[in-house]
Structure formats: C-alpha cells, structure tokens
Length: 389
Length: 171
Image (cartoon, rainbow over all chains, first blue to last red):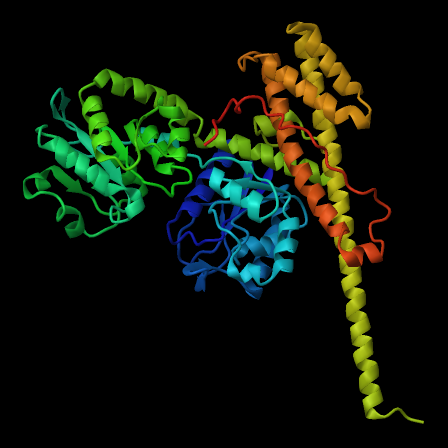
C-alpha cells in the first residue's frame, strides 16, 4: 500500500505526536508498505529517509499555547506537490483540526483520508468561529482514529461522529534491548535494598509525586539501601528540598532524559511507580515501563487499570493514598516471585501494544477507508499481512 | 441612449452577484454528489463485509458448532433488506455464544471478518451521517440536489466485534 502521512508539528522539536508518527511510519515500512511522511522541518536538520520536509515551521500562538506549524500559500503548494508526486492509496493525517499541514492536506486531498486525533481537544476557538469550515474539513475525512478512550469521547460528543480507538504503540524492542544504567538497579533482598523509579514532572500535582515521596520516606526509614531514581524536567532543589536530609543521598535525579536514556532508566528500577491522581487518558509510560521489563505499581485510575489488565500485569493501589502505596511497595520488594509473575504477565500485555501489532490495526482502518471510497473490498491478505501490492 | 455610470455599476454588481451564486450552487451540488457517492460506496463495502462474515460463519458451522449457527448464517445471507439488520444481529449473538478459539484457522477467519465488518460499519455510519446532513440543508432541498440518489439509509446493527480484538486489548 502507498501511504502518505502528514505530521503537523516540526520534527526539530520532540513531542508525543512526532514520536507516534515516526514509530508508526517505521512499523508500516517494516510491514512492507511504501510510506512517505510530510512534516515541517528546518533546512539543515537531518531527517529519516522517509520524511519529506515541508519547509520551516513558524511559531504561532494557537489555542492558548505556541505551536510550531507551517501554514499558508507556500505550504499549500508544497502539500499539493507532495500529494501529486506520492500517488498515495491512502492519506493519513494527524491532528487535522489544528491549522497546519494536516489541515491543508485534508483540504487538498481527493482520495480516502484517515485522521488520527491525539489530544482530547474540543473545538478550538478558531474553528468555533467558522463552523462551516469545520464541517467541510470533517466531511473530507473518511475514517477517524482516536488514540484514547477520552479522545474518542470528544469525537463522539463534539465532532458528531464515531472513531475507532487504537492505542498508542510502544516500540518494545527499543525498551527491552538496552543496558541498565551502570550500578543499577543494585541488590534487592528481603528487608533491604531495591530501587523505585519515577519519570515525569514531579512538580505537577496530577503526576502525584508527593504520594510516592511520602511512601518512600516512610519505607526508607525501615529499609536500608532502598533507593529512588527520578527523571523528568524540573529543578533539583525543588526535588531534594522536600526530602529529609538523611535520605537525600538515596535519591538520584537524572533531569530531563533522551528517549534512549528513558529506556535505560526504566531498565534500572525494580519497581516503576505511577502515582498519578488523574488526567491520564492512556498511560503511555506504563506500556513503556512494561516493555522495559519493570514491575509496575500504579494508582487505580481507569486508564491504568485497563493497561494493566485489571491488576494482572502490575499492582494497583488506591489513588492518592501514600499508606496504601507503601504497603504494596513493601510487599513487592520482599517478594521476588510475585515481581517475576507480574513482569511475565506484563510482557504478554505489552506485546499487544507493540508497534507492528498496532500498525496492523491501523492498516485495517486504511483498508476500510479505501473500500468506502471505491466500494470494493480489499483482499484480506493485503490488510492483514501488509505485503506490497 | 448611453447608460449612465450608476447604471453600469448596478449591472456589474448584479453580474458579479449572479456569478458568485452560480459558483456556490455548482460547488454545493458537487459536494452533495460527492458525499452521496461516497455513502453508496461505503454501503457496497459494508454489504461485502456482511457477506464475508456470514460465509466465514457458515464454514465454521459446517466444521463444528452445528445447526443453529449454520441456520443463522444462512438466514443472514438470504435476508431481504427489511429483515437484514435483525438477521445480522442474530448472527452476531450466535457467534458471541460460540466461544471461538483464535488459534483455530476457521475461528480466526470469523474473528478477522467480524473486526473488518466493525470498521466498515463505523465508516459507513459516519459517511451516511455526512451525506444526510448535506442533503438536509435548506438550499440543497429547495434546488432538489442529489435527487437522482435515494435518501442515504443507516444500517443499524450492534457492534459485531467478537470479544476484544485478538491483537490488542482496549487501552
């Protein structure tokens, strides 16, 4: 299948949508499809061979934040040229409701269009002012994908249409294959040692870091050698200042980490803790931690319970309860057999989120969109096994 | 008698307005036609997927799971349009009761066909909704655009997905 994918955001800046597009493109190439990705990028930046640059992105204030996007007559001409040269069987745009390359591509496209909605964004102010434009845009889309239950709910309630829910994938091989950081995770015996991990903005209330901190402080007092590994953006003083002085040398802070170091960090912990108090629509970090082989302890949120298969692939604790978290941590640190059992189940669960598996489901949506455009049903093999035509 | 300047102006404005109205009408007619055609293509694809699922179910019923499933598949294949939705829902219920093993090729074929049917149904519903909303606009009704096409119909069946997709749990 010849697939054209449009990413609205520049590859020069890392971000969730960009990572998703790159992983999806690589998985589709791996299944034997022909893929071209159109994205804004600076002239001098080095891009993967399947990416076509649509020129520089300009920072524009949009919907309360600054988006680096490409929009305007020059971009339109580039999008049209890319579409004409590509002769795609299907066009796959991401976040088409942002004024961006994606929107331009939808408006210029003739054939089947699949759109993926990432954020649970409701109508933006710009589009609310132009209801007619929104309608024209949406009716050019043949099939819609939502990456989370929340994003799908917005589709159904606000955009007046359904969407197929296909979760974010995780590149299992990238996480399972890396070496842990030197000296980690160290020993974990009955009553002593062990490493807990946390990744994310520890200053943000909904990430729930204080819950983990309280549980760690209470636990570390009775458990010599217990260590905490923290990664994420933030000021080290904010982090260490809130721990009692005698425990500070048992906390290690890595700061903001690259994708590779993120994988290494997740490989370096015995237990990965996700103490979030809400606002998670999917729980990408849990699938990444599972892929890295960590045992996961997470708060009992809907999204987390679903990823962890109701608690079979990782332990759940009552949301916002440090004492509950502490009990679960103490039990797991002393029970290597249970950790191993949870990890084994985690491997099975995460296999369903592996990119090649997720990409096959996306290809089925492509097939449905193509069929709905010309009325003929595509051979099962094409969609299922993904061989080129 | 030569026309005065205001008369020339009035005529030019009228010509421009008429031209704009004509352009808008032609564009709207094209849009209605496109949405209609697409909804009809989606209906053909949906029809094909329904047949595929029923055929796969019949094959499975012949191998095992017996008479009731076979009857449901036959009825779904032969149903007249008015009874088809009920017949397809009945087949979905029979398949749900059958406890399929994804590792078995015949069961796998039914599961895959059901998954593709679910996608096809979702897309069809969305495209019919688009076509109906375009055709219910007052201007489109007054000009009777799209009158060569029948009014697009929904195909109202339950979600035919069997269990969770064998690949990916809901996430």
